[in-house]
Length: 444
Image (cartoon, rainbow, N blue to C red):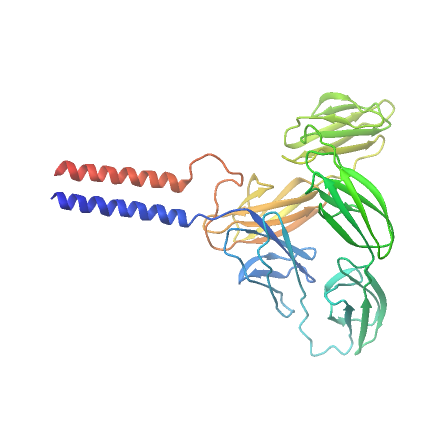
C-alpha cells in the first residue's frame, strides 16, 4: 500500500510540474517594435504571413510586433480591382524602432481602356516615391494607368535627395515615358548633450542624435533638438549643395516634465488651471505650472481689455511640458480630435497610450490630443493588436486593426504587482495535490 501511495504522489507531482512548465512556455509578450506599411491605395488589406493586420489609411498602416515573438517573414497587400502585392519583411525592429516597407498595388487591366492613357515613370536612383497630382502612387519604376486625357504633375522623392518634378500631358490610348533624376544636396551632422535626443528639421522629426540629416535643399532650415526633461534647442542653419555642416546642441534640464509653460501676447494675463489661479504670464519667458496630473485640463487666461483665452491641455505621463502661446483676442486652434476604432473580430478592449479607455470596439474615442498615439486592442483568445495613429485637431481618424488568434497578454498594458492568473491556478493545484496526498496517507 505504501508503494501505491508513493506512486500516486509521484504522479500528482509530475502533473503539477508539467502544468507549470506549460504555463511558463506559453508566456508571451515583450517590448514592441513597429512596421510602417506604406501603400498607394487606401482601404487595402494588410496581411503578415497570411494573418490580417488592418487596412491602409492615408497611405500607411502601423503594425506593432513584440520583439520576443516569432518574427513574421512576409507582408501581402490586397484590394479588389488590384493585383495582390507581396514583399519580404525586414528583420523585426528593435523595441521602439520603426522599419518602413513600401508596397505598390497596380490596378487590374480593363479590357476596354482605349479612352484612357498611361504614364511609365522611372527614376535615377530607382525606388523613389512617386506622386501623381500630389497623391502617392508607389515606388519607381511604375506604370500609372487608367488616366483620362489631360495634364498631370508628377514628382519623385527619396530620403537624401532633392525632389524631382515635371508636368506630363496624357493622350487617350497612349503611354508617356517619364524619367526623373534626383540630386543629392547638402547635409547636416547633429550631435547633442545628452545624446539620444529627437531631431526635427523644419518641424518634421527625422531621427535621434547623433544623426546626419541628408537631402537638404540649399538655403535656410530650422533645426530643433528635444528630449524629455530638457528645454527644446532651436537654431537656423544655412545649407549649401554638396556640403555638410555640423551642429552641437547642449540641452538644458528642466526640473519637472509634468508641466505647462504659458506665455501670452501681451504679457500680464492671469492664468487659471481648472479654475484655480496660478499666476500671471511674464515678459521674455514662460510661466511654469508644475506637478500637473495626467489627463485633460482646462486653461483660461484673463487680461483687461481682451476676451478670455480658453483652451484644453492634455498632459501625458512622462511627456515634455506643454507649451501654450496665447495671443489675447484670438481663439486658440482646435487641439483635440477623435479616433474611430474597429477590429476584426469586434468586441476588443481599447487602450490608448497604455491607458484603458473603458470601451470595446467598434468605438469612437473623442477629446484625444493632437499628435501621434498608440492604440492597443485586447480580446480573449487573440494576440494583442497594436497600431500607431496620428490625430489632427478637429478631425476623426479611422483605424482598423486585425487580431490574430493566439494568447493575449491580458490585464493592463502597464505591468503591475498583482499575481498572474496562471500563478494563482498553479498555487491552487499544488494545494489540491497536497490535500490528495494527505488523504491517501490518512487512509493508509
